[in-house]
Amino acid sequence: MKRIACMMALAVAIASSVALAAEKLSLPKGYQKWAKSGEKVVTDKNSLFYGIHYIYVDARTMKAYQAGGPYPEGSRFVVEYFNIREEGGKPVKGKKNMIVLMKKDKKQQETGGWLYAGFNGDGTPSAVDPVKNCYECHLKEAKDRGFIISRYAQFR
Ligand code: HEC
Image (cartoon, rainbow, N blue to C red; front, side, top):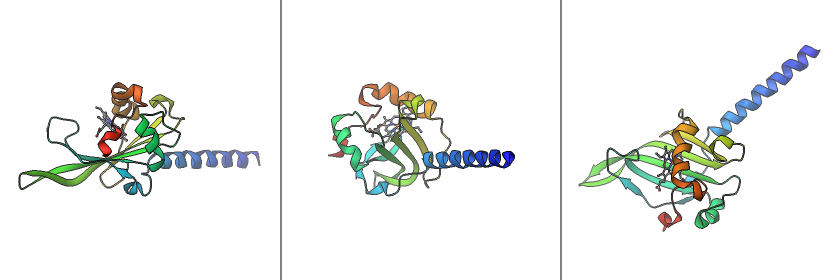
């Protein structure tokens, strides 16, 4: 009996850690209906940000964004990145190649209280180290703005 209880506790622990991973690794439903920034084009091939990207901000996050923080628990940002295609000498949106997510989550103490996650262009999770691949740069660029680097001005 004791053994069964033990196994059940273990099963629950495994199930909840799977749920946690799933929560971490899925894009918010309907984010493409959130407020969307203007298009940002970086044509410098040496730049880490080469490509075309858009930022999406959850409606409930907008007020804090306009004020430059502080951000309430659950605040969310998504960025979609696209390759650049030349069309008549002009850079236009090509294939989607990456999606990133930030979600305010006080449990994520290692990364300033934000969950950082990366996805491939098709929305499947990509392997990122949230500290080394994300937080270190956001910390450097926007420590005094709640780690959010872009500005609301990009939405007008
Ligand atoms: C080398 C620096 C750097 C790294 C590394 C980096 N970012 Fe960013 N991130 C930026 C910059 C710069 C912006 C603002 C882009 C703009 O203004 O259009 C940004 C914007 C964002 C935004 C929109 C909210 C905001 O801060 O403006 C999210 C979400 C985001 N990044 C998530 C991530 C995730 C997840 C990772 C790791 C997989 C990551 N970033 C890695 C520099 C970085």
